[in-house]
Amino acid sequence: MSGDNLVTTPNERDVLTTKSDNKTQEQAIIQMSQQGRESSDEEVYDPESEGPYLSRTYADDDNDDEHEHGHNQAGKEFRLIPHNTAKDKWKIYLPVVYWFPKYQYKDWFLSDVIAAITAIVMVIPQGMGYALVAGLQPIYGLYSALMGHCLYGPFGTSGQLIVAPVAIVSLMTKETLSRYIGNMESLAEKYALGLGFEIGSSEYQDAYDTKLPIIYAAYGSALAFQVGVFSLLLGLFKAGILANMLAEPVIVGFTFAAAILIGMSQLEFVLNVHVHGHSLIGKVIDLFKHINEAHGLSVLLAACCIVFLLILRTWKRRPNIPGSKYAKFIPGPLILVVIATAISASKGASTGWDVVGELPKGLPVFVNFFDDIEMSDFYPLMLPGLLITILAFIESIAVAIKFADKHDYSIDASQELIALGICNLVGCWFQIYPVSGVLSLATVVEAAGATTPLYSIMAGTGMILCTAFLLKLFEWLPKPVLGSIVLVGIINLVDVGKMKEIW
Image (cartoon, rainbow, N blue to C red; front, side):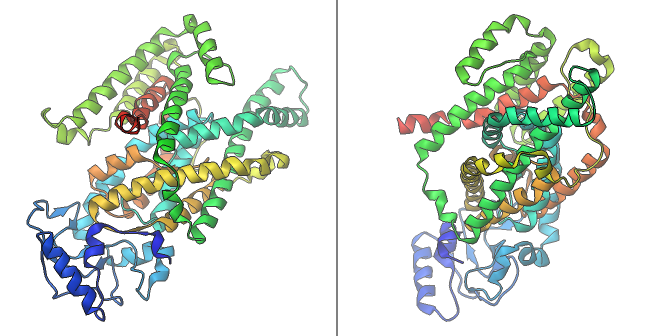
């Protein structure tokens, strides 16, 4: 494993020593003392030691929060991956076999359980909302979140990262697949005609309308396949260093443009009007042409949801407001989903709201997506697949590094690529579209106490239960609510401070 791919924190670089390298140990002690720390050389790193800790002790008089989320900052070093010189460094490719046998249930389990519950209630509505951004039915967003949670936990190196549908990747998925919509419609026509229905008959139209979303989802799975293959190859060839090669102004500009496009796509659900056009300008023009057709109750519902979420967001970010430290645990999107769905179900079609509608029963099943796509379209997906891979990795590694630095542990950038590759490559056979690390949700679960990837595995298990038994509860969920959740969520994509700094 290349040292370039191992992301370490400043503390780790200061104190990692071996028994045979006394000079390095003395230098580390001198450097720590210059930083105002008192170091103890009673325990030094033993490369043959096992478990999620490296032996390291020092006292930090400035750290009042000694056990933040179960991480003892004044004691042994917290690790989720083996050290480069450890005899079991092969476990970097399956980190769960390294950290799970030494899992500290007394210190970490409760925090991980709370984080898992938080992840479930937050990711279900947001995942369904981002599926609409991708042009897919909401159920595929739920499937994608489920597979991301289940598969990332055993292979990932971050204790806080969430892998699920994300705004930018969803937008790129829609823009990529829209190029092939003509071929998808042709495939749906062939399917309906193959059943013996005449063009124009109600049976033909029903078969066409049923098959087209399935074909669209198959193209999304084909794109996830491409992303999975590229991610795995890049990870195995230790290409984690690619994270440093994209200029920050490019990322800031791209995310700002993505926020605008995503916002435009969600206005269709908020206003309950159909917007046509292949460019942003064309969509804006068509939107204003049909603005008088906006559905009043849908707009009112969306406005109430947006106001509620913005108030909650402000409450979380203002420590001077009473109770702000507890506001981060309030699942705003879930509250809106429950209330709006209850109203919609009780009033029925009289509200006029566009709802999610009937959802497939049970868990996602194995589907060979190659049966529902034109093979001539598969290879042209490789270029957008590579671009999505790079952006998904950059977003994921940025989130992973953020929390690794905060909690003082190491991640492996190339293994993160492998984990993303497995999530997409395995998940593509179970009706997902490309997934990535989600900053907004990772921030929430980190605040809730996420400590190890076990929280992701537990959240995935909970989502399996929800998908198996509770899907019917979402059939009356109004789409304006999902649109509102996405609109407020993309605020995080607009970094005004960075723009001023670059300017």
